[in-house]
Image (cartoon, rainbow, N blue to C red):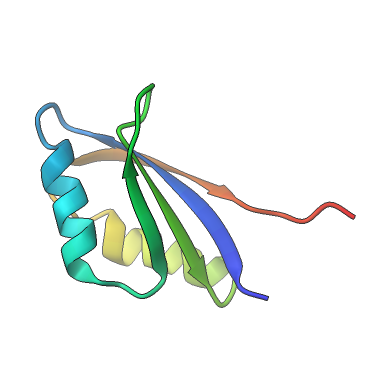
Length: 81
């Protein structure tokens, strides 16, 4: 079962649309959705990858370098039996 995570993204003022456009233009297959949201974060991206280490690599290698991103918080989705 793939690892799923919610990446909460805070952008620099006035850069939210640019960040969303870049995330969508990258067409990274592991990025399942990108949404503008209200609240303390500006964007939420849902990502799925083989395991949590791969999710971490995706966030640090593909998402963090995007111009306009101020900070991220990655919330891992877990199963509770």
